[in-house]
Length: 510
Image (cartoon, rainbow, N blue to C red; front, side):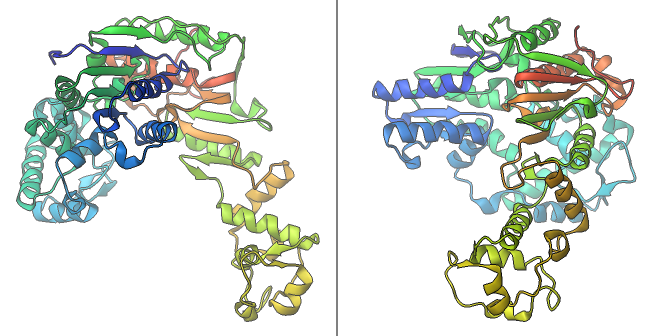
């Protein structure tokens, strides 16, 4: 894509405060009198947009309505095109189009043709069709370069593509990529004084066209990113567009996260990529520690905050099973290892048994896990209409609240699933505080983007990457290099590297 604008470019290596710099840039323009509704802050993730908007609101006493252009590019398209939520393709619509096209069922996983599902989100053929649109390439070209061609005939893919588009057109429906395409086709870009793009290395071709339209109408354009952390090319990100971007460049050259040891190995790794924006930065003034292990079980994770990373979902699942067996609380993809209500019931039951008073709200939570007519009578429903904050002791509950038992939690709270009970017991035995926020986070490297922790455990196992294709393609080898670079740069203090369990491991520099 030919560049039609010259922005200020902020290159932000890991931990150098790129997003913080973008937010301070917003504050600078606001202090200089630029109206808040003339500033556009567009980040790749909704979380980053919310953070920037809240900072501006707090600093300048603004409301969300004062900052209408703090959005993702998808959200901007939705707003500018004045699309109604009912016009967005839903699961029901995908079911309808599947039936209407009469193409039967679609393969969910190309590795296993026996696993099939109706056309819808996650469908590999829909991903193929969508990839063609976000990269602005012919569908047949995308098809010919994919593994899908070994499973299904081109005529079927073409038929589905045409039929799906006809279905949406006749019903005036949009999917999320349609919104971007329509935005560009209509040139729906608002006229802004300032346009800031964060995490620009993750933008797709169609999103770069949106940026060009926004930039053409703006007085100031700031684009921030780091091509070394471009790990979404498989999803259509055009990292080359970012690498080739011309403008006035500022390199944030001081990391506030990465110690010397981690900086050394990560820089050796990333410098193996030939086509990249050259940027040097300094580690923080700490050596840090880095150690190799044969197995993750060798690593003592009983204290501190941890981030456990794997290249594949399979690896992350293995880490989850290990952590459960070791009796440690964790979160995985935003979900706690055990429902917080269950953990609260356990803690409050033991408090009650040990003579503490607990509130009506806590009592009602405990009763959810007691057996009717064995541990509690139906009389619990006639508990006095007390305020949630009213305090009870165990004797009062046994007298007036239908409680029949004083046995330990693992016997009394029998409606908690047995697997969860065994896991909680291991956590308690291990000295875990089950009411605190989990100190261990498990994630794939892709989902860890932007995350950090004092301690990071990184699997170097690449098993699960089909046909070791990352070894055979220059682009895919570079993509894998960037993925592991992101993994290496998440730790603030201690980095633990685990040798691959199988032959397929990513080779990190010594």
